[in-house]
Image (cartoon, rainbow, N blue to C red; front, top):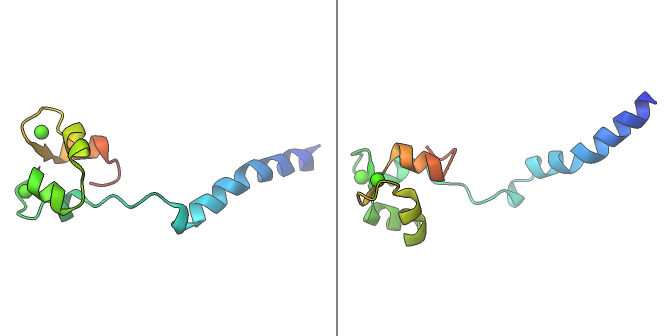
Length: 83
Ligand SMILES: [Ca+2]
Ligand SMILES: [Ca+2]
């Protein structure tokens, strides 16, 4: 029954494969930390976040220590892959 198993694997994996291959279905690409940190001081201010289209809600969510800026670590927690 080896081929049967293979068929099952194919049926289950195929949609995943198609999804991975379809950029149109992918979530909006997270802008990178560096591209948002315009003045390159290692922190994203509210103004920098806003300019990049980050919502207030997301900014607050990302600012874990509530110092009013998002550092690279905080950014990576909320937007993995966007470092
Ligand atoms: Ca900055
Ligand atoms: Ca912070």
